Length: 196
Image 1 (cartoon, rainbow, N blue to C red):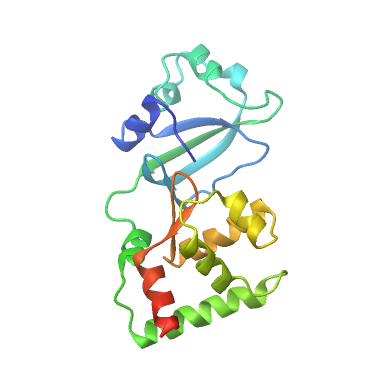
Image 2: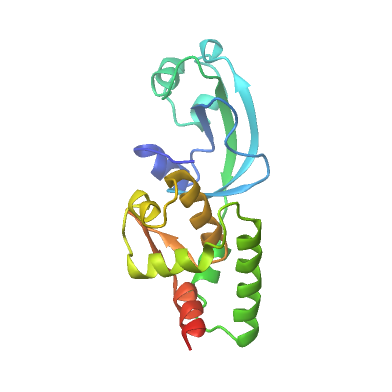
């Protein structure tokens, strides 16, 4: 989930703990932690609501940082025919385990072997053949390059390429930039270990 304007600050400070979204179907799962532009949040609940029935007296308005029902409806984005969802969440304090993992550049031979096994498994599950090493090498050689341009380089569609890069990110090997990606210290150390 992304937040805009003053909502970003409100979520980061823990003042905003609810959001209204128009989605064809839920894009978040109750109990799961998500990284957002305002910090990590854990989803407490998600339910479909009728935006026309939102009342000025609804306590969710305050939790979502909205002045009144009209303000909540006005700020809804997307196709008006899509369902509206009310998401309740709370800010997750403390360091992000994925960021700590990504910063860990001191890899033991066992670490390298474990990563190689995990990447081989991702390659085996792929419908388009081995891709993990090629993608890491591509990001190393072309940091901060648009995902669409990188996808063309390896003859992939952009959405599928992005999903695969996210799998590498979950292993602490890549990091998303404003435009494109870069290898994390862990990702650089892993490729350097393979280059030896």
